[in-house]
Image 1: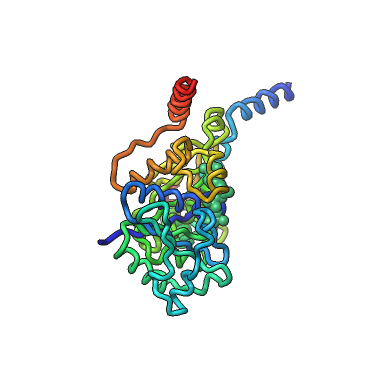
Image 2: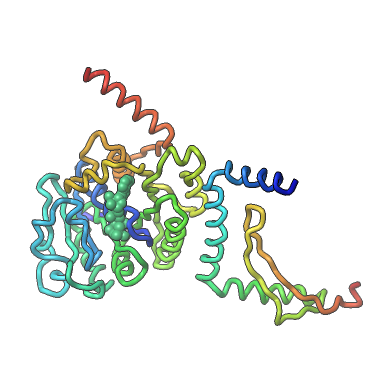
Length: 267
Length: 91
Ligand SMILES: Nc1ncnc2c1ncn2[C@@H]1O[C@H](COP(=O)(O)OP(=O)(O)OP(=O)(O)O)[C@@H](O)[C@H]1O
Ligand SMILES: [Mg+2]
C-alpha cells in the first residue's frame, strides 16, 4: 500500500487545523480507508483531546525519534472507527525535539501502511511548520474569511511552493452565510480570486463543532451537523470522488428544508 | 453643502459592506508581501526602467522610487522619477 501524506496548515493560529484533521481523518475511515493523524504541535498537543483519545496516550512522536520506541507502539488505535489511528505529539518537549529529516522518515514509514497520513501542523512558519511539511506530498490550507487569515494563507502558499509542494488546496472555514449575504464577509469566490489556489471545500461556522469537541467526538459522526456534512463531502473529494461544492446560500436552504421535513415527520 | 456631500459619501461607503474594504486592503498588502518575498523583483524592475528611460530623458537615478499603491479599487505600480533634462535631439 502506498498512501499520501497531506499536511493541514494555515500560518495563522486557531483557524481550524486540528478540527479539520480530526474530522477528515474520521470521515475517511468512515469511507473505508485507513487513516493516521499525526499531531506535530509539540508542546501544545490538542488533536488527542479533540478526538477524545487523551487517556490512551502511552508514547508520543518524540519517543519514536529519540527513545527507541517503535512507531507501531506509539500509534493509538481509535476503537470507534475501523482503520483510524493517532500519533500524538509530545506535550513537554519543544518543536526542535524533532527534525524535518526525522519527520520525513516517519511519514514515509506511515504511508506504507495507510491510505492517508494527515499531518496537523502547528501555527506559525518556524520549525514546527518546517517539520510538518517535510514529509508531505500535498497540502491543505485552512483559512477563515478574514483579512489576517487570508494574508497568512497567501504567505503559506508561497512557502509551500518554495518547498516544492505542487498540490495545495484551500478549505475555507467558519463562513457565515448571513454575513456574506449582507456584504460583510468575503465569499468563496472572493477568497479564491485573491489567493488563486484550488478550492477543496467550504465549512460553515457551526456550534456543533464546539459541542462535538466538548465530547471528544468529531462532528462528522453527527448526521445533523452542517460542519460535519461539509467535512464528509471534503473527505469524499480527497478520496477521489467528484463532489460539487455547495454554495452556502443554497446549502442553507436545503438544510432548512430537510430540517422542516424532519420536524414534520416527528410530529 | 459639504456636509451633505460627506454624508452621501459615507452612506455609500457603508452600503458597500465591509467585505469590499477587506478585499481592497488585502490586494495591496498581498502585492507587498509577494514582492518583498523576492526583493530582487522590484530591484530588477527599477534597473530596467532606468535603462529604458535614460534613452529619452535624463533623470535623477538616485531618487527613483518604485512602489505599489491602492488607487481607486485597484493596485497601481507607481514610479516617482525626477526629470533633469529632456534630450535635445529628441525634443
Ligand atoms: N466551523 C467551525 N465552527 C465553529 N467553531 C469552529 C469551527 N472550526 C473551528 N472552530 C473552533 O475554533 C477553535 C480553533 O480550532 P482548532 O483548534 O481546530 O484550530 P487550530 O488551527 O488547530 O489552532 P492552533 O493554531 O492553535 O493549532 C476551536 O475552539 C474550534 O472548536
Ligand atoms: Mg491545532
